[in-house]
Length: 88
Image 1: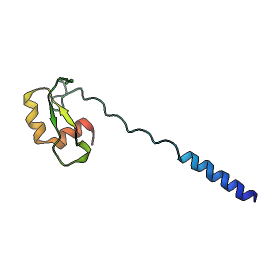
Image 2 (image 1 turned 30 degrees about the vertical axis):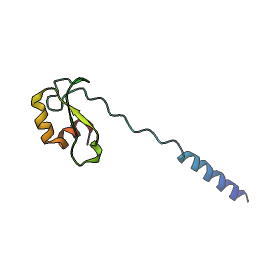
Image 3 (image 1 turned 60 degrees about the vertical axis):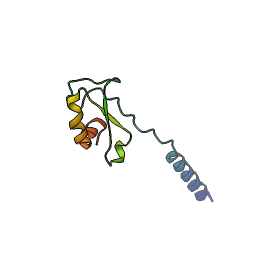
Image 4 (image 1 turned 120 degrees about the horizontal axis):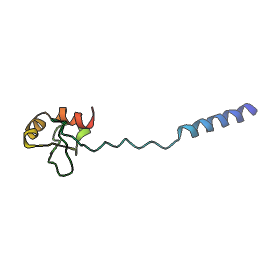
């Protein structure tokens, strides 16, 4: 009987330890520099390229760029530049 009680206590304590709240996913930092020209800053007023590829990780996201010269290369190789901004 004592062994049964001890086993139940151990199981309930172990269950409580694993029943913790899940942690919230890490927030992505706001983009502050152009992925093509990291020495150039971007802000809320900067233009951006919306992701149009097939990777669900980047759906609904956009990458900001510093000037018109950066737009075409970012659109051409979105996987590369979105990975630079949002991680792989």
